[in-house]
Length: 400
Length: 174
Image (cartoon, rainbow over all chains, first blue to last red; front, top):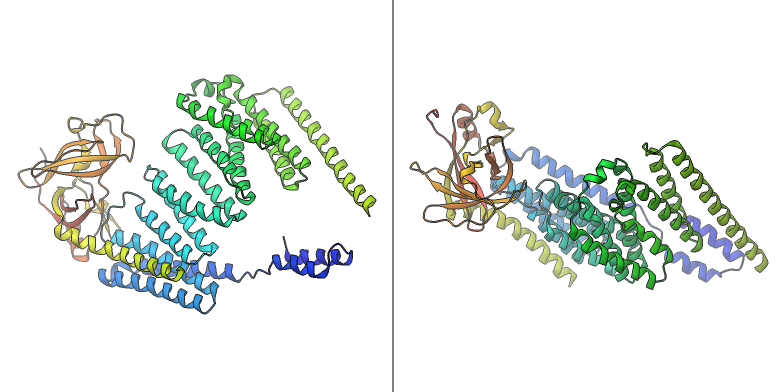
């Protein structure tokens, strides 16, 4: 939300007598003016850090071993000391800048020393150390940027470990979840929660693809879904829930396209243990949704249904699930007066329609029927939304 | 409290970097050093910038030395039991995905599995294939068209490091 917009709106509210001036000031003070300065310093820090390191790397072999060590360590310490000094003088942005540069130097130091002294870099141990260092710095200077830097280091390390070394690193994931997830749990910042949840999902997907089989991701997505019930804060719960449902929506699209070819379904093999995990967890998810009286939540859980058990109908059922979920999201938004959910619903609906369009195996009648039904449903929902909107306007007029 | 944590973190980072440096020197001095032979290379192919790419003979394991339980995945950890020949150069005695015991002169090193070729030879990677040459060494290796003998220091905690590369005249294999 833009502050200028809020200022203009709240001025009208004061004029209309909805709120008084003191209340307006109170509301505005919740949305302090944000300067773009800190972002600029953040990127400046990254660029300068990169410049130093590329320069060093380019001239690296010319410099004597011990001199290199001295250079790296003195750079590291001076940036930290400078950062500390800036913080003490109340210049937080500069302080953060110095800390980020110092962290970059630390990471590069690990890799350069490893290279220089012929260490065998057989695991992402160095990334784990780097991630922990960033986390400790974050604890001593709790600033978002440092948290993000650490989070990205952990994520990058995991990607390298999984796809380059073919060895998913559980220790790194544990640090990611416990340390960085712990911060989310305490700070309850929605934007950061989205970032955390998305990167966690990508890691679990990477694990599924490289170590087991992609369909195991369903179990992890369910785990994230169930985890969303364990946190009380809405700003943490929504991202966890959203990422779980969103990623399963993408998996269902993949299924719809993949199983269009019937031979793919016939040759598709699933480990029996998969159902041993899926069925109890899915039942638990349904139970939680019912207990929380989330009727739309229950419907959206159909995304976790393994469509490949339906054999030749797998593709059609996947498409149906996409439509069911999109429409339920639309209706949920409509009933909860939540424009964002309506938007997600419409986007999902259009995406599902595109998927159907690209299903070349069906004859034209089936497809046109799908479009017709889709169009009618969207029309009906549009009418309902319109009526709800005008109903609310009428209520306002009556009250006025 | 936060100030203390900040300084402790900075000190820990410096100590970690210094530990990397010292452990490397310690390894060189106190670690067990073994000699491994590389495959013959044309020196034109061996260089990548300042590095020399070393391909060790022990990275190819014949089926008779392979004692693995199941099918091994790429990059899985492999234990290699090495034993010295009459020239003191270490050769593969056994390789497995399970831990191996060394006796006498023998050593066990860790590697990562790569693939099995058409001749049923298992290829592994010791991860010490890249060696940064000093200027003098470079000239020496460049002049040679022969195999190289590489001294590798091993630490008890599984770290390994190339400490020396020397050229050697090897008779053509018959």
